[in-house]
Image (cartoon, rainbow, N blue to C red; front, side, top):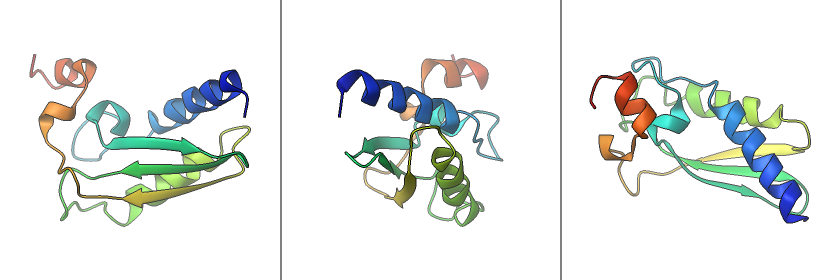
Length: 106
């Protein structure tokens, strides 16, 4: 895959994920640091490795599905899959500076 095309697709995937919000925190999942990895293979299939703020998160069933749907809707992506992981466990140190400012933690 052309590196410029891959970079463009990754940026589009990130933009799509920035439209998904944790319902308990008014910050998108990307800025919250819930996205650990974005993989796009030669067939333009995206795999998103993500976590949730806690294993008992009330949106554990719906949030990954929403992410899959948003990423699958990115032009150029043929399919998407979300893999949940709990390693390393999420904590607030993973939030971006933008998220910390938004939440008044900076």
